[in-house]
Amino acid sequence: KNNKNIKYKCSNCGAETLKWMGRCPQCGEWNTLEEKIEVSAPKNIRISGAETISKAPVSLSKINLSNHNRIKLGLSEVDRPLGGGVVPGSVILWGGEPGIGKSTLILQICNAMAKTGNTVLYCSGEESEEQIKLRAERLNINEDACYIYSGGDLEAIINEANEIKPNMLVIDSIQTMYISDNDSPMGSPAQIRDCTAALVRFAKANNITVMIIGHVTKEGNLAGPRILEHMVDVVLYLEGDRSYQFRVLRTVKNRFGSTADSGLFVMEGKGLIGIQDPSTYLLRDRAEMVPGSIVMACMEGLRPILIEIQALTTHSVLAIPRRISSGYDYNRLVILLAVLEKRGHVMFSSDDVYLNVAGGFKVRETAADLAVALALVSMKKEKPIPSGLMALGEIGLTGEILPVSHIGIRLKEGIKMNFKQFILPSRNKNEVLSLEKSGKIGHGLDIHFVEKIT
Ligand code: TYD
Ligand code: MG
Image (cartoon, rainbow, N blue to C red; front, side, top):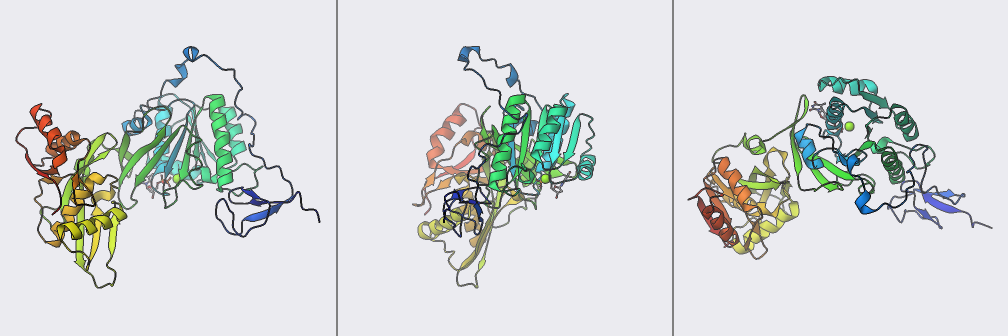
């Protein structure tokens, strides 16, 4: 029996093993290992026209920056997270949950590119030409320089791109693309990796910008364990809650700029509309003087946004009371409840607790802790918090209120939005006083500094 040349290959991720196993040791999928006689696995599938030109080393002082002239799209909320515009020849990955608005945003970007005199080739493996046309009609887009191609065969797409020679190639989505030489199924990590590698080579060899759309799973990973992020130049995520219209475009990685800034949008009938004043938008439906509601200023990129935090507590009939959090970290909520019980002596152990951030915004900052705690206590005690009050602060396990960053920017936004009372960490006091002294924020604000939860 000679099984020297027999290997087992996972049809999901492409990993190879010498023995058959029920579960792939790499990706953890069951029953995906298939017998494979031929050993040599195509690691770097080459597509004609997608090769990188080989080059000799160049002295740093001689490198020309001319092809780093960014194309400004004129969509400020897209230009902003990109670091000022699109760098020609760059590969940009747009991630987001299905249905969040990626195709819509990309079509708007195609329109902006075409309007600045660039040719665009939009390839979709998800929708037909007619479906894309319907969306374009809704968005009022009708450009000659925008070519639409429906299909998922990457080799055919690259051939078309070599014909048309667009300035920008769009792939919607990478999960629907395939290289026919590669025997892994469409959407598998192996296909996604090889397709992306071919697209990166194509972009670099031809100095064509490639925009790749990728769906992320519920856990927030780009399907195919983040395998794409390191291959591309820029990674952006379009985030939001599908039941709300508010969207944030965040930069996760940018080889041509910082990742500090983000774009803010509202999903409307005519596509994603950038918003300049998110605080007004997010606070527009706020009810006055209701127990359990409070406002805090959250940093989104370089901008402050005022958000409303809402808490609801009810007597629980369950053995293990319910805790539900939307827009705020669940584990953080559980910790805060424990801190409030132990240090603040407010009991929640027989209550169901629900926490919500209004408008579908997702808070990632610990600076929201104090506001969450106050909302919970306000609800529990049925005492409303004055509607012109804002609170900022992180809460430690000891009940200590820790300082927050960018206090000046946050305060200014609050003052601009007519907030009159502020509860801030004692450890931010010196900074706030010097800001007041230097006239950076108004004088005589009603500020209450707090040290710990008691
Ligand atoms: P889509 O861009 O198809 O999402 P993705 O490509 O991320 O899967 O958009 C999905 C939703 O957006 C769809 O349910 C309808 C809605 N939508 C609008 O609200 N306004 C619009 O102008 C368009 C085109 C879509
Ligand atoms: Mg889509």
